[in-house]
Length: 452
Image (cartoon, rainbow, N blue to C red):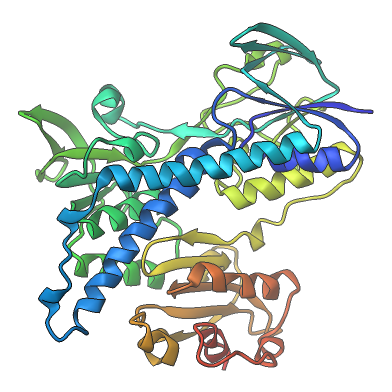
């Protein structure tokens, strides 16, 4: 029986451990922090709890328009209890973490709470609250994830700024918040805090938000945010930060000064590797993480790296699939990862989801494409639910009519995108997808309309 250790219990580590156990290995998970990793404790799940609150507030604003007297709906964001919002998040996270850890233990997987570091090519040293434990292994899987990054000039002021970990537990709702970074994390927090009354400014070094995303997606979400009062400073660099009487002042390179109560730095993440003593196994690494081959092996044959730590796809669901594939490969398979069918999702409103290639990416690869698009302002379901923002866009190869990508902006986009994942995975043509019957009235009808 193979003895395998998995370092990290996040969305890469625990699925890997479960699959290894299923395939007959003896498995140990080593976790220095809270079980479930960043996604469960400081990322995906707590942020969705907060976003749900924001969306409910947004829905109340819509409901006011349908009252005989809108004043009868005696609600304002000032009535929200920040402590109750935080407690709701904490309760959800705690419940999921407890259930997950119980599941893993039920599968007879050993869990050691402590900090792991390599002692040699077949031993790890684990520093636990009770002392040091030495564990031998045949294979090791590194699934330690990433930490929030602080590029210059923010690195000099870490203790005075927020990151995507610490923002969940701030003591009160800030009156104003400047967000450094216009990627998915920054935009989700912008959407939430704007909905509960915070004045939001987003500063992005690149010329636009959502780097790499389809141009139409970018324009639609940016326009929606600006209508709600969110301000964007694009293609701008922060030169320095001043701290003055409880306020923080960002000085941008074009001379603009942004005065704000809090600053959230959401400008990338760095690999969590420094405590692993990789020198003991002569494993090279850089700030982005560990290089792996198509089977998720590192340069050391019996050490694998999965999830954010290998930099392939910084998404929880991608990490989970990588974990399962790595487990199967350790146990003798030769499976590879298809990044082309990984949905990219942003849980703002409207939601954003994409899969496969967009037109710009296809052009860069020399692939000839055509696109078809339909807008939700023609959708009965979207109009009746006040969700007419957005569209469905299909990217296809005109040579054989096969679907190679899709982008959806709108209500339930993060659910609908899986329909297009099936189309891309099984190389379906537009004509194949037209044969489906899309229920009426649904948001999914937009996919059918975009295929016509």
